[in-house]
Amino acid sequence: MDFGTSDYKYGPISLGETPEMTQNRGYFPDKRSIMSKISGVTADVVVGKETPLYLEAKEDLATRLVYPMRNGVIDKDDERAWTVVKELIRYALRPFASADPKFKGFFVVGSLSAIVPRYMYEKFFDLCAEVAGESGLIAGVTIIPQPLAVAISHKALTCVVIESGHGNGQIAPISKYPIRNALVALNRGGADGNHIAAEVLKDSGYADLVGEEAMIRRVKENIGLVPLDLDKAIAAAKSDPERFRAKYRVEGTRVEIDLAENSWMRFLIGEYVFDPNNEIFQSYFSRGMPKPRDVRIGDVTFRGMQDLGEAIVESVERTPVELQPYLYRQIILSGGNFNWVVPKGLEDVAVDSKAKIRALLVKHGIEGSDVVMSESPQFSVWRGAIVYGYSVPEDYKWTWERMEGWVTVGGRKGKE
Amino acid sequence: MVAEKAKSRLLEFFSLRGEEPVRNQSELGLLPPPALAVSDGKSVAVILHLTKEELLNGNALLRTVVNAAAHRGRANRLYIAIPKLYAASVDGAILQDNGIGLIVYDEKRVFESIPARNVELDAERPQGESLSEIRSELAETRQEVRSLEAALLSASREIKDLKEAVRELANRRPARATVRAERSRVRLAVEVPEGSSDEGLPSFLKGNPWVEVLSGRGEEE
Image 1 (cartoon, one colour):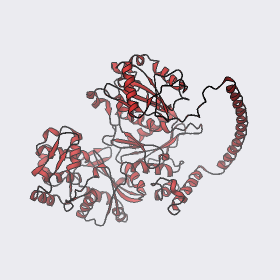
Image 2: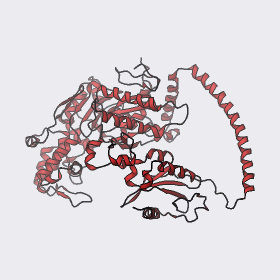
Image 3: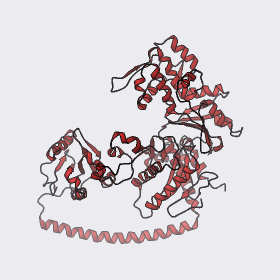
Image 4: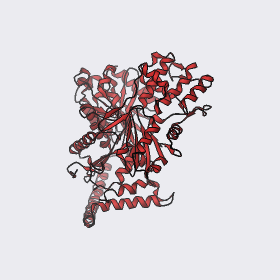
């Protein structure tokens, strides 16, 4: 089970190459409403592909539609979020349950963000034990960090996995085990790219569009570019605005965005995701754009302004010196925040994520790294979880020291 | 939307999918005749329509599911059609588990919310079969059942013997041995040259060095 920020991927090994997928969310119907009474809604929470059938008034969605993993972490006391997670666990298992009387339940591998605090592990195990007690669908459960799952699905035993999601990012060195004390977390992700894209829109006369997050995201994805060198890219775009002109028509609408002479700003969007330290961004901070701050969640400090190259170097330098060259050798980029394209004709100034990371590493003195993009980024965590569940012996009990092994549930309690 | 109007909308929906109303429902054995039955020439779908008034009666849905089951042997697909407003009252998982589809409609559109499972039917019973023919067929069936019972008894004995043998084997080796065997199987599967017997494994398992690394977890202790 891969609990991504937006999507939930699940299913047993028998599914083959791709998992089942639904949104990582749950809807709490208003059971007091007349409509619910008439239609006999009995469930406290609805999850899965049929959720849209239950949705009621638009104004209620913000409070009744819960995305539990929006920021990768669930508060300990967020009962509604945990209720959704429990229902999603049940939802994933029910269709695959065997009718064989000897079926003792599944071995469940949950994959969560590498930065989740210990209480999330405990809570997840408790929920699985509850589901096992109610239904007998679970025999054992374990949790692996998402970057480890990515490394496993890429068949890479020694590497650095960089996962960049909606709200934050993680840099995780792996060498047969995740090297937990070398984990570096960033309080910067796709949402911050949206912030700078909104500022670009405002500056270009499209302030009326910045109220809709989905619209800003589309603009970011269709107009934003990653520069190899921001200052040189801006200079090139200002000297030849027509070549760099950013025009985007929103499909199915009359809305057309044309940055015209401000087209050089499209480079700000990509640069900000990788490195927000260029002084040009200071003017946006002083005008009120939220500056990514350092925050502490559980035991982990999330850096706001650290560039991705520096973050990789900091992470790798926390590992033994002997290991470092092997880690730099293979760097895997994972997550939708790395999907940047290079338009034809702009290859001299715009680059993709791999080239940008390589350039940032060179800036910090690291050369010759093999940076690769995750294949099938949507499914790599699920695939890694399947390999993990398939391979780890079932009598290997969970230990908190190693943070691995199986927690036995459903009447076969282990020694955890 | 009144029942007749809804019915014509449903017919239109199926017609657009190339399925036309079945006129000779009783000849196909669809008894009691359902409100709607359509066919694309190869398969037959029965649609049981529930109106708003019927849905407000708590037992109507259950009754409809039971009615649907009555058509199971004669129709390839079974659907329940309800107004969209009441879609939330239907537990989709129950329908899905039983292979029954859900058609939802409102003033603007009709759509298949849950697809029905297509069930292959047995060869059709010839029309006009006489009572004596049915009796004789029944007698033959009884004879077959007796033979099957005998075969089942013999198979049960064999399974019992096998179970004992397996139990004996399992007692001879620790739990981890099961994992070892499985691991060896995977290793064998991934080490053979490409194009051979590892074809059944998902690509992410083929040649994955993590399988061996993870299989050894716990050994170092």
